[in-house]
Amino acid sequence: MTGYCKAAIFHTNVKYIRRRRGNEGIILLNKILKEMGVDLNAEKIEAMKSSENIPLELRVKFLEACLKLFDNDTAKLRAMGREAPKDSLIVRLFLGYFMSPNGVIKHAPALWKEHYSEGELFIVQNDPNVGRLGLRNFKYSKLMCVYLCGYFEGVGDVTRAKNISCRETKCVHEGADYCEFEIKWTS
Ligand SMILES: [Zn+2]
Image (cartoon, rainbow, N blue to C red; front, side, top):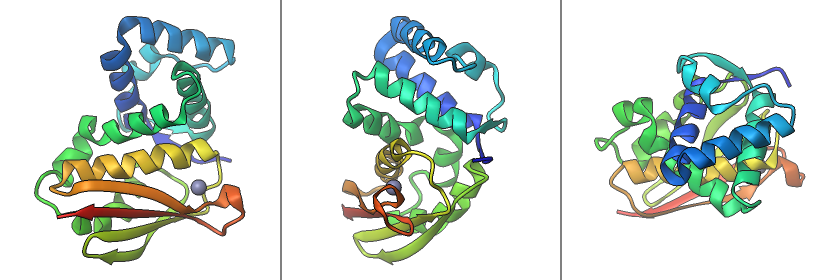
């Protein structure tokens, strides 16, 4: 477990919590992180540059803290993932409204590399109204898979796709060789 991810990911999450839960939510998140012994809080995150590297162990801890903030409801963690692409300048600039979901899937492996130093996102299928993305060499926490499922739906929301949904069909935390995300939509 030596990989890193970009602070940009955390920025979108702090923005989300501020928007949804206000300052009270941020205070509670900071309290949870402190109780968990995690050397990170919302203000520290906001002071970082988007391109700054944060160890993936901290990413997992941060997601665990968010889950506690969300009353241990994984659906709420997934919802945070779904909103993230809308708050990400990179995603909006490069993928934005110009691209179809198939175009986004084509660029997803490169987008992954922009954000994560570990793991390899690869295309399993990229057909009209359905795509499958695989993720290998990335076994950190099931919470990552839950978050990513929401995130992929959110990327679809930024395109012209309708009724987008993502389902994890294989998971390394359930004995598979890699995680696989099936993304479906109507045009
Ligand atoms: Zn998984």
